[in-house]
Length: 268
Image (cartoon, rainbow, N blue to C red):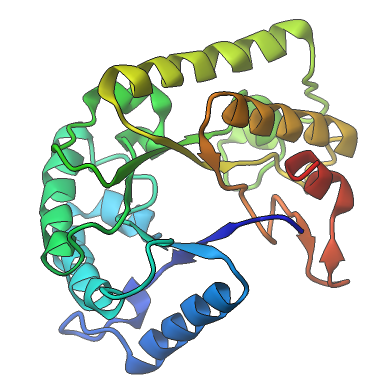
């Protein structure tokens, strides 16, 4: 289809035993996933995705997250450069800027013991909000890729989503695509690009998408998706769409085919 990497979300904590050791069968499956991606010519971002348990219980996170990377990082020490590590998806809540900066530094040190030049993806707190980029404290490491997630305007992209607050869950019929909407998008990405230039850090738009099950007309979701992807490329940001299948689909799992309008919004 034209994609060149996949971001693989790993909710690994539930596969750990009482001593935080990962299930050998799970690790073997992970090896297979990376191997198949490589054979298909795809890079891989291995993303530890236990963001809710980590953000709700920092003590638990400080035990399990280093244990995860102590086991996973050495397995891929000799992997090609297009295998990258994302230390934790969307820190938030109790993982505020101070707590996340401290934990991130420890995790990076763990990874660097076996992967001194591996690309490591890290983003700010508040669900990888670009507004929090100024608070992200980064070491002088040339192999960091800074990520942010973009779902603005949230009342458009998440209208009707069952896991949001009552106000958003009840929303329907919110449109997008006016000149003002597009200008706001461009202004947001200009701010991120300015931070990138000032701090000499490359940027990954790690997630973006519009909820598919809300009844929002497909043409509006396609227009928003194409516009966000276009702004990312105009600014030189890498990007990963959320998600392959699920609630923001680009792949119709039931019928085993692409959702062509969304795919064309991503790969014209």
